Length: 84
Image (tube, rainbow, N blue to C red):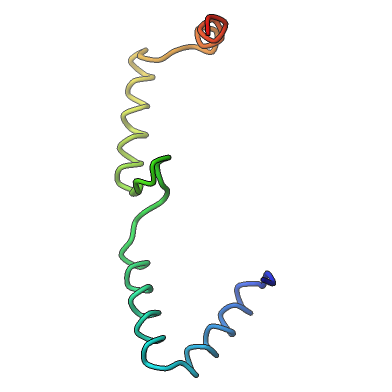
């Protein structure tokens, strides 16, 4: 598949949409609605979606742990690795 710029991609999609049958239009419409309402920003290793809200909460939680000293230093990790 040839890589194209955003403008060219839009033009090509408009052509597809302008010439599409009802089934294709319904698919594109449904996919667009899902994309618009989705706030998924990534996925866990097991495939579980990560939402914007959960990512922000995880970052805040991690920041609190670091500020409270609840973290492991690089040196501690290196020592732990030596014992593997």
